[in-house]
Amino acid sequence: MSIPLTIVLLYIALLFLISYFAQRRSSGGATNYILAGRQLTTPLITVSIVGLAIGGASTIGVSEQAYKLGLSAGWYTAAWGIGAITMGLLVAKKYRELGITTIPELLERFYDKKGMIAGVACQIIIQLVITSLQYIAGGSILCTLLPDIFTFTTGMLTSAVVFIGITFIGGMWSASLSNILNITLIYIGILLATFVSLTRVGGISNIVPKLPPNIPYFDVISGVGVTGIVSWIVVLVTVNLSLQSIIQISLGAKDEYTARRGFIIGGLMMLPIGFVCALMGIIAKSMYPDVSASLALPLTIMSLNPFLAGITLAALWAADISTACNLLLSSATLFSQDIYKRFVNPTVTEKNFLLVTKGSVLVLGMVTLLLAMTVSGIIQTLMIGLSLTAAFSVIVLFTLFMPGLCRRNSAFYTVLASLIVLILWQTMPSVRIFPHVIYLEWLACLATFFIAYLFDSNTITAANLTKPELARETSAK
Image (cartoon, rainbow, N blue to C red; front, side, top):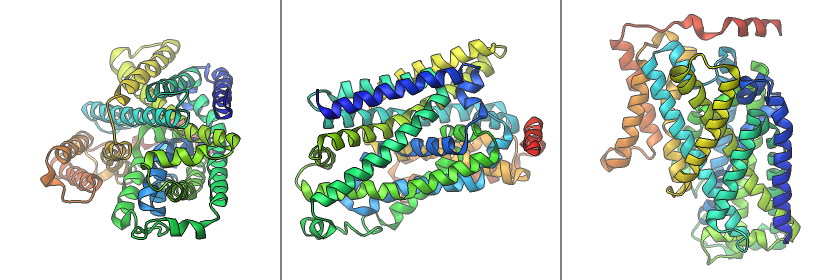
């Protein structure tokens, strides 16, 4: 058995061992399973948000783009970090104070049922698309780095078993605790592989002559360009403010200050790692200039010492696992909390609610696996899907900071406007008057929100911004 395969199998075994331990902590009920009993500490919040952000697009995707465009590709992951810091500074504390479980729950509390229903549908669609992309990335990593063992299909199936299994066993505790291993492995593996590869090629001075002279490989701006970088930042700040999987991490914190600290520290940790992955892509370009970008990085990794190659392989795969588990859990939470419990069986017992949530993990895991067989273009698909979060960010920011401008119908029509913009963007090229759909999304959502303010006289109830029991809990601390 090869050393890289042995390391990957050992890593899988450790993940399931952690999940078994986590199962004991999550067995106390649905809140323990989906929110870790609201007892996550600052380190666990930190590794959870870093694990969610550092997925296939932030590692493999960045390296492949750097192979073509240079160091500026690292801004994709840095944009995630900026988004997490913004979330920590702006709304992480306020989300925790609300005592909600999901974003649609917030929509129904302050707005109306149709706004909540639209919110559930959009949030689930967004997260299922992102989760399916992690299967694609996981299958690609395994089949390109271990071609004698895995095909693309068996690589995706293996990834699915691990993603679904870990989430099913221990829920939020499983995802959070396993991210301690995942993040450690990601950072050690990527940093070591980059350092050793850079040393082998004789340093940056020896790389430069081997690169195409017409591409600014070591310019941190020019390759992707200011417009592209700003678009990434706008999209990912928007995502961090309102995507259910991210919000669910903050809601699992033991208090609002823990949520804020965890997001800020996590965001700071993300800032440099994308540029390290981009440097790996540049090194791959200097070593294998005539192969496709998707093959260059695997060839570079497998040319390393077998032990280091195995660590790096496990690290890249860990990036997908850490992202997929949180996404899958939050999608299941949306279904069980906002569809099953709200409309199908409002009087469900705690035990049965936990079973429904676990069953949702299995079913939605299979749905995302089937979806993964049909989508392509990871980063492009990801960025388009994430643009839908503009509607939720607009709603949340107005609700938390300017409730006087909110009306009962604001949420529904803002979400509807977001969907219409995305459909038009995809089907009518003439509406693409901005460099990225996210700008049109923000413009349309803000305009819709203000129109609702002008024509709808039904105001929301700002007094519900803090649950009384959570306010007492906060003051006691």
